[in-house]
Length: 294
Image (tube, rainbow, N blue to C red):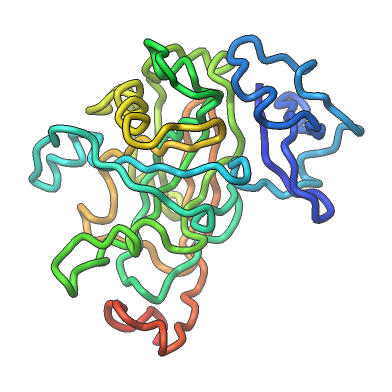
C-alpha cells in the first residue's frame, strides 16, 4: 500500500495511491486509527471518500502527520566514515529536525545564506506506526518507509570550533521527504531492509549503496531513540547516509542544481536548489562568509 500526504485545492490530507493508475483517493479515518495496523492494514480501515483523482491534480507534501516528530541518525555507513578518516562510533549519533525543515518530493530546496557548503545525503526514512513498548523487534512497529535527502550545512559551527546541529540540520525548507510511504508488507521488508539507494546531481551519480550496509541496524536505531524519547505514530526516523557526499569531495550543491534521490521499491525525490535568499542583518549571527551570488 502507498500512502501519500497531499494538497488539493488548498486542503491537505492523507490519500491512498493506486500505483498502477497514478490515481489517489482521500483518507478520512484519523491517522492513529490505521497507522499501527501493520500487515492487517486494508483499504476498509481508511474510510476512503470522494472520487479517484489523478496524481497530477495534487501536490505531494512531506509524508508527516501533523504534530509528529522528525529524528535523524548520523555516522551509520562505514564506507562514508572511512573516506573521512573515522572509525565506527560506539553508539548512534542522533538529532531532531523541526517540521519546518521538510519539503515535498518535488519542491525547491532552499539555499540558506548561512552556508556556502550545502550538502546532500540520500537516506531511508522509517515511519513509526505504533508505540514500540516491549515489542521484541522494533521494526515490527513501523507503518512503512519513505525517501529522505538530509541536506546539511557542512560549514556550520566552524566559527566557534564546535558542532552546530541547529544550523547544520534544521534550516527551514531544506529537507526533501517523500514522495509517499510504502508499507512494509508491500515492500516485502521484515527486519533490516536491504534496498538499493542512489543520489544524482544534475544526472551525475554521486551516491550508491544498499541499506544492508548500515553500521547500526534499524531495530537498534529505533530502540536507541525510543529509550530516550518514546516514539509515537507518525514519527519519521532518518537512518543515515552512505559515502559520496560533498563533504568527502568538496563538491557541494549550487543554486539551480537538480538533485534526485531514489530508493528501490520506495520512490524518487526530484528537487531543485533555489537561489539563496537575502538575510536580514539582524539575523546574520553565525553566517559563514557571503551568500552565493553576492
